[in-house]
Length: 253
Image (cartoon, rainbow, N blue to C red; front, side, top):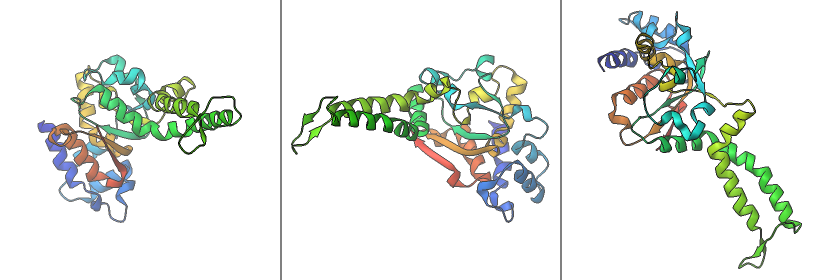
């Protein structure tokens, strides 16, 4: 806790306004390094906090589909292993930094992530299916019923499209993974920070600011306890100290 607080104090001083002439939303590792050198009184330790200089192997992310497998099995508990660490891989950039609390149930996190990442995908994929069922109903190949307006309504389209949409929203990412597309890269602490090697784990925790700087955006799975837990408050403060709030999305769980 003391280490996190110390990092938070330094990162809060590394505010976006310190980078003259640059818009906060475009902060990257180079910009962060430039900012650290331009602020009086901040030592080179700041560079270690917000960049992966000299340790790029620690910059890891996991494809979205891997953390959604088996209805988010990775969220079942907070303990990790060498196997969970191998789900992630070294990357040059991270798509989305996921910030959440472990005390929130596995199913709520799975549903929130499925909704955020797959709602649009499911809507697009179910559209051709809906058009096909509508055409089949219009040609009399599928049953319909009369409603109060006197026009026939295709019940097959309504029922099957709803089921198809839910299946695609909840499991579409896993289906696409079968064809080699595992979705955007995300940061999830359990799989991107080694949980068994104490030395590597310490290095990973110290680089949380760097993970945030290397991420294109942040996704907050917001719960009632999100703002009372030191870990998530630190992640939130670190992100806002370097980036613009427009690059953060909040999804309630």
